[in-house]
Structure formats: structure tokens, C-alpha cells
Length: 123
Length: 113
Image 1 (cartoon, rainbow over the protein chains, first blue to last red):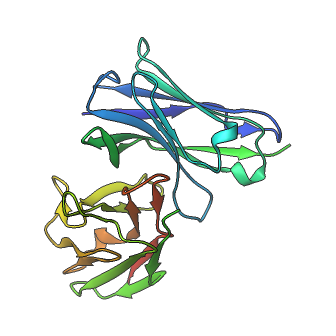
Image 2: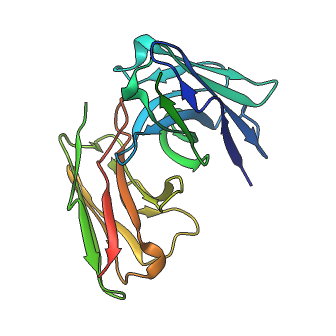
């Protein structure tokens, strides 16, 4: 059964870079049938899609974060990563990695999710 | 961006009774070339990640109980739980995947009355 697991620092200082890695188990990240995405949820709030990437590195980013965001893939480690630069308190959230299903080569729904990682931005 | 507005924000339903959640999109998410509505529903229990329930507005994900159903087209959609069970207490989110940025509704909390 597919498993996704987020890892990274739980506390990041303002203006620094938030870095998270998602390790995919029991499935190959090199599958042509999926993209791999990040979704976040501020405490007590709704879900926000951040970005999604294919195993080749093709990516979709949400416009509001695009200037600060990089999502990359390491197929040798079966991992993908999120880097969000110049963070503020507004970036405090639970960050989920998820598998992004495809229909006609376009990402659609998130059919498997990691347990989530709380990242707090504070000095 | 396509804005999804869910209603109500929360509801309390007696065990065994019907629960209905609405999701309204600011623009149509019905794709004319395939006649599909690009809308999904997720269930998120406390302390857990979201779980996919419904896709293409009305297709049930494998393993999802048949008391969960989705309906609607264009801009107006409904998730219905036909007979609420204790394990259905959760926040339910709709998501459009018609166009980027993919967006979610604000969530609806379902509780037992």
C-alpha cells in the first residue's frame, strides 16, 4: 500500500527557507500515471494547494507562492521536496504531501496523502 | 481563481439521519468536451489527513461506503450522507480540478446532534 511521509524542521525563523521532503514508499515516484503534490492547512483553516510536480520535474505552482517556491524530485531516493523561501508567520501550517492522479495527462484529485507535518514560523 | 463556497460551515445531524453539504463554484466546472464535472469531495477526521471520497462530482472512490453520494453539475454540487454514522464526524472539503490553481472550499464540519 502506498505510503507518503513528510519530514523536515518543525520550526523555521521568519525570512528563512522552509524545507520539507516527502518519502514515497511501496510505489515508484517515476510512474507516468501521477504527479506529486503539496497541500497546506493553516491551523483551524481550510486546505490550500501549493504545487505539484512530475517525476521528470514538470511542475504546476500556485501563483500566490510561485515567486518563493521550488518543488523538486529525486527519483533515486523516491522523494520529492518543497522549498518555500522568505517565510512569514502566514506560512505556519500543516504541510501535506499527496499523490496527484492524472486524467489525460492533467493532474486531478489527490488520492493518497501523508500524515502531515506542522511547520511553525516564529523567531 | 475559481472560488468554492461551501454551506453550511457546520451542521449537526442525528445518527441515522441525512446530512447534506453544498459546494458552489464561482464559475462552471463542467468541461464541455467530456461532459464531466471536475469536482471532488474529501473527508478529514480530526488529526488525520484528508481522504478522497468522491471524484467527477459523483463517482465514489473505491472502499467508500455507499451512504456517501455526490451530485450536481456546472456550479452547484452536493455531498449527501444518507444515514449518518458516528464515524462520519469530520470536516468535508470540496475541490475543483477544472483549472489551476486547484482550489478547495473552506470546509464543512459535520457533528452528531
